[in-house]
Length: 175
Image (tube, rainbow, N blue to C red; front, side, top):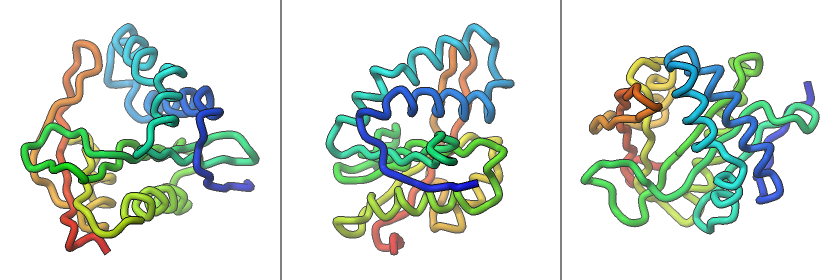
């Protein structure tokens, strides 16, 4: 495998839409009725929506590629989580997914670090992450990087409403 991470551009919108839908489905698709999952994927990971994200200043996406084929991605930008403590200037890791076949090789950590480096490029700031309540592996990973649970929020996928933990790392802990 010739794996590499690169920053995505607007020309990658279709690739991002495909890998985002594939990784979300692989990780969570079994949780939702098919029609709810399909509607969520069509709306959340539409090519035009991914292009807007890639064209918006203040947002960034990285692709993990195996010989040019996307096998994972990370996305970061201004915090949009529904928590009263969120302040202007806070950043958020919005997505971090790697296909199962490519997990446990350190590449998820490298994607995470690329996003953290970008989020902190202008100096320390408070960072946020939302993580599914039943994903203890991700919760442990983020805890190792200084994130602590500070609340909860919901994440609807059709008729199913998941409970998510809201995690935060204070600016003074962001090293």
